[in-house]
Length: 409
Image (cartoon, rainbow, N blue to C red; front, side, top):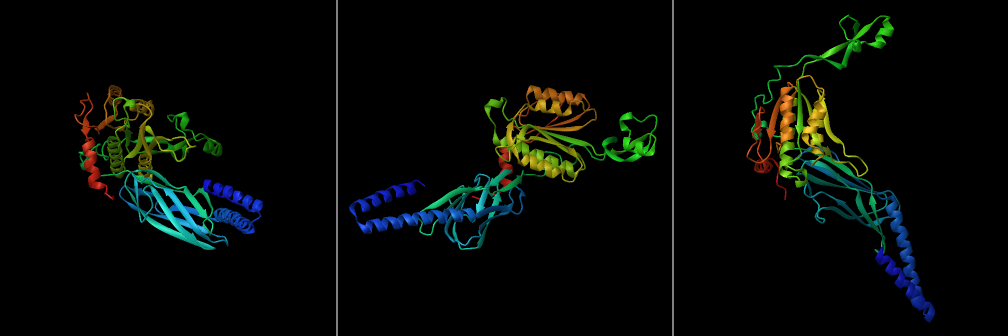
């Protein structure tokens, strides 16, 4: 736009010279160029007003190492052709590798022309190199007039989102036993009544608690009726993920240890869900925001037997920001305060400070089964009363990444 302003200043000076010196050729040429600029400005603005740019990903949920198709569609539903169009969309180059793009690094660039009433699609292969929540778009769009004298430059609101689930690997690659590392799901199942699962109503018995009374059925039958509750037979596994990787929060975060902890949590959740457990996930961090206006949601996925529970856990881990908001000991205390049913708790952490150790001992003495998976660098901590399963540290994560994540550079 600065060049266009300079052009108008130069043309105004030339017009003044032509009029002052009474030179018709200069005056006519200057007026012709001014008319071309005005027409070009209208052409570019009108073309941009009708042009639509949309990004779409057919498979918006994928795993690390997968390839997905990114489609960019340009529509010009107007009579005016657009001979010069440039689209630039930012791409996180450290996480997604776009194949078939010859633009600058970090930009998905399209330079093309559109005739009247033309629709154009371009498809790119995107290799998912790192777990996370990504948005491609909005695009920076430039539309030139046919003579290339002026252009319209704005941002198109169309964007596509992609969730890349974290890596999941067999438990033996994490130095964990593959034969029921958290206990046999067929043994020690706790049979208790679930107050949220109502299977009908039955006549009230003297030993039934008053809170179980089914009031709508009581009104319909004219006598006290009690909710008929279904028994829940699946044991729970609660995964507590610590995103603090240094003794003090102000010391920063070690990304390799965060990724190893997240991969461990995802792998354990997958194993537990397939083994018949009701799996839940809690962390002392937040998930990434979808937009700047939204608040960062908590990483709290309550236990459930729903078939889509594993997908919800993997999505929460994919969108994990990687930074802690509080000590994990406070998260454990908040989530399990008042819980009387014995629960299997898996604590995944790269550190073992005194507060975390104390909270695990308190849970163990309260009847909960505790499994501590240490994902930090050696030496492994010696925790009183709590068995430690050593996963490995940064070197182990580098080995896993080399083995399971393709190098696409």
